[in-house]
Length: 325
Ligand code: MRU
Image (cartoon, rainbow, N blue to C red):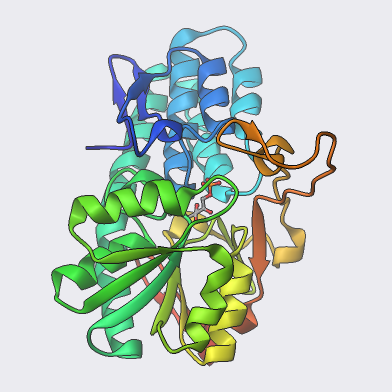
């Protein structure tokens, strides 16, 4: 089952907002539908956004009209994950050759991400076995599985690969407030794969690490900067501080498409600020007093000084040994 694919001339996605209760596919038949699906996180996760962006441009090229405007709107639908702009730019570079060439590029990106996931799984599991030994207990954050890619995942690919090798004891899944990608999506994927896991509150992570219940923190990235700073889902930085305090490895798994050497450090990244409703209510019900002012960054920056290693589909970057992307 692919999170995103190209079917009957349109991107076809699983609507991730309906998981875990409903597995519902939607076909995105206009540029507006692509932009809205990206904004409301029906399709999400950095590698999947790269594919969605490229397929959005392929759709715009097929439909005709003001394609430049469509490219601009898709590219700016979300600002933080570098993959979105990267996928859009790669596809848009073929616009002069016609719609078929744009689609061919989008499908090439899809296929490359599929291969990349399996490479990250293998390399990530190898590194974790080297760093943290046998029967590991891993803490992960947000969702980095098949739902965040095309299939299989990034950090969750490494976790699955470890599980297939018999090297995993359990995964602690942090719920990932406010949109619960961990609680709704990662638990669903781990359950489908038969991987032992327990759900924890985000704020429990550093405490559980201090209690000796975690051997390594393994998660993904939305952008990896030239100096090794990692931009990822809000809550990542707290887990990194917890890992440092507990003396356990903090490993980031992401494809090369997430490495952005044009951006010097995390300070240069546009962090998406999301709607107040995501914080001031829960499950469609208001929980904070009406009118409460919120501050809702969707991502944070983990400085490279807290990162042990970054695993991509082609290499392992030992940040702790001074390597840089
Ligand atoms: O807001 P989201 O759900 O798109 O955020 C996703 C993340 O932060 C993931 O950790 C990241 O994209 C890596 S996905 C393989």
